[in-house]
Image 1 (tube, rainbow over the protein chains, first blue to last red):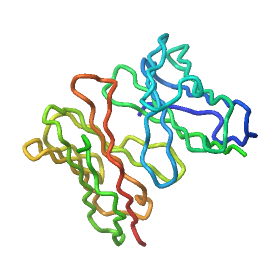
Image 2 (cartoon, each protein chain N blue to C red):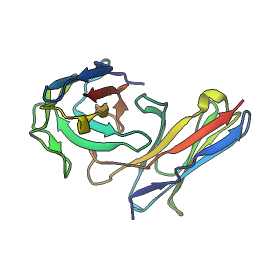
Image 3 (spheres, one colour):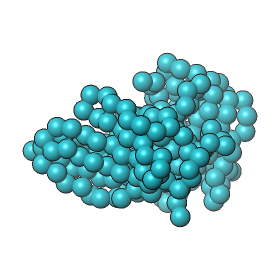
Length: 114
Length: 112
């Protein structure tokens, strides 16, 4: 199947700092990428959908100024958590979709904000 | 009513058992269905992808779609402890191919 990578796999930062997470599709061109967050023992929560070269579409309740998403190329999307706070601590997962019918997920990034 | 509903479990079975994981969906227009497996602290991994109704088999896994009852199932034969994970069902919206609906996931524990 298609491979998606994320970097870093985990990150610890101080409250008030910004954190950038990269998502790359390694063997396919991801025309659409998705960003999810997942709290312990809970299901995936879609944050935003982005198409290459376009602004991301954010789900209701997700602050677009806090979670900056850039999908600059067909193989790279980034999520920047700006002015992170402890409540932003979570597991962030990206996925990519190319010309096929389904999405392929990255391994996730664990963020801990102290 | 959620578009895709899934029993959260947990489901505990002995090694070697046949496992049946199930979801229901609300929109009869749904055509594309997926099953993902998610290990703890990992991203979901695509297991099975089916279109429309019928069965699809891949090794020990069989995905089944019953459109008359709007029911999707994943069967795991000869279950192994390594199958212990959370299983997510999903469907793709027929009117917006960027829209997916996920079940809440069923946690499976296969005991050695």
